Image (tube, rainbow, N blue to C red; front, side, top):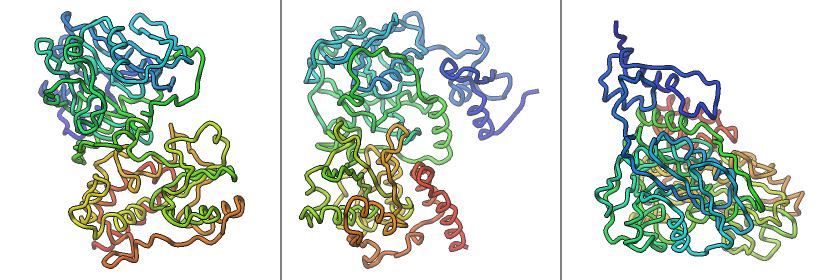
Length: 531
């Protein structure tokens, strides 16, 4: 007798019992084999729910991999991080595509020699650096064997079905346009977020003939899309829509800096492997989105903000304020007394105004090598309270025709503001609303030696003040709670729906910095007020 179960139960089965495409990396995991005879489901629904489930060969859906599958050359530029490149290579080696494929890695760092022996991986170690993108791309295309070219980000993750989906949607009969997907996931704060929708060139593909006909890639056209590169074609093609199970790209914004990120020189023997189970992480994230959908359609970026994204991996990268004579570094976290802290630390140097930008020793994203031994500190705050403070200071009662840094409209309700924040990843969000985890962690490691709390500000500041010879008295500079028309108690802003949205969006903050109890307390407060 056929077993009938509801959709939610079936989806939960899919999350826990489907076969794991990464068994080679995570050996010993149990898998289950489902067939359509187990459940009374239409074949189309089955394939949508369980795209990776093993079935009997007689029941397999038509494969996108046929003997006529076009050969593919994937182009990957080394960006200075060997272990991220290893993950990119591992992504390539796990592809389920049964056609001919190759991965061409271009390394133009003359101080680094990359090595990895595999029949499908070609490493080109250039004797000198190529400064500009266009000649670098010309060099890369010349090294490729095949006509269909695919961009393979060295810092990002491609899921095992990427090449199969791309070749199925790319038309060899119409090479006038590249393939550009419209949906990606983003890996931030050691977890998957998304899906996000926009023109995403970094996950694209095009033919060699098209590349040569249009003259290569464009220069820095920052208004065209969120990610580069982009071909020098006049007409842009329609973006290719991807169903949830077809999403194949994980962009890692904060990991996308182009400088040598590790300082590693000499010969590097690459050992491809993944450092997380990205397939399961994406599947779990998509399962959550089925029952709490959020519109994550992103607006195009422009100007310096996209430059920062390409260079640092975020439009508002972390900021280090260095006090070289004291061998001290402060990571600024907006809306966590940062103005008061900067004011008291810069006072001995005669700086009393414009403390956020007047200080001459500000480093973006990372410390220089000579400053790695400095004592580093920062402060954190209850995420519920911090977000309300950002709303009161930057959004509430502002002119209605002004957008805060071009991102979020001003003079909107707190509920609308929350929805605007949660739809954006940290790498594309203004620094006042980014998660604190995003600022204070890198690759899962805390970046500071001392972490104070806003809730215990005066007492925690004493440790830094006494050790590094600053005044122990902190001025209270930003008083957003004193504005006319605002609630002094941050809890008054929340409904049960809003607190769940904020908790899910900033879950990394709650878990890493010990604010889990504030979630339970706020939930009890909201329910008591409601009823």
